Length: 491
Image (cartoon, rainbow, N blue to C red; front, side):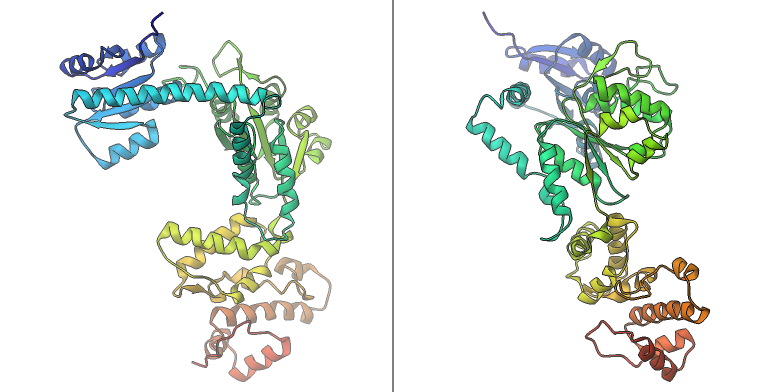
């Protein structure tokens, strides 16, 4: 029995272009033609199309707009743009929005068109074979030992976690080891920790170390999102179900089928959305907005919370059944202040990332600056450190960033082993005489000012309204260290 020919859809508003393409391809392919986006979508709904050749400039929807919709609804179809123009913006839009496999410029040669079509159908076939093999290997891995599976397992073990920066003796090492073990078991995991501790990065690493590593990973932060919007984002919506929604909306639960979805800020879900997510977590099914039939999704849910969900359950703010469905295993991510040994590694990497992004080369951060950064508690964790590195980079004049660039509130943080290691608010409310509490704040202002002005005592005395003798007396009285190797500047 002869195998059916691969199916190709040709879309162009010019009849003679369609005829020319069909003539070049019809001996080797089953060709369908459409003169615009709407008839093309009708064909896509009726036929199993492997490859689309689409002209960019068409009345109504452009080629990129049409193929972007195809990508949402039929992601496996290989998409090719034919254009007589080479605008850079069009190309970037095509790559980002429509996931274009290849550009084909006019005028094209029949042999060139035929070669591109064969390569595209081969790619479609290989992708389908890969999906089938992935499913087989997932369920037969325990029974079948092969060299391919061994290589894939080694690859999964090595991806992702190496990007979680930490020092050799970091408290995060034990957390990463737990995460590696959880990753290999296809169960939900709850990641708990303060905002900015890197829960999303660890969730992504767990996906790439799991049996689902060859499938998509999506994440969404549900903090502060209205229920109506969140319902559409998660479950999707049928056409016409929402005013202003002209076409079908595919939700993340469907996009992440056979993959992983990381839901950040799970503690902020309303009771209504908690109930809606419970069915997904327990039954693996959901109903899109405006839909009548339940859709099943083979999805692994990883969730992140800034609050202790067990306490939230005990105080009646979170459903106990959802908590147990989402958190049969849990990871507790320590804050940055509990692993300040990681700070030099994180600060240098974040600085170099910011320098590469903004095109401003630097050599690194001075030891003095790192000591000041290590005195601070970092309530915003890695996210706050990233912002501080970007700020220091913006104001830097030298290749090595010094402590004078650090924000004032960080410079005013007292040494961690000092009696005065308290925030300003704590100083104001703690016990002690007025004189003692004022001295704590005065010492911090002196240290911040001297460091920011690179220990130029003349400028510091002038700014603080002191004489040089008075400034020197206060430095000696409080035992303020220069934390610098540079000579003190008088002018």
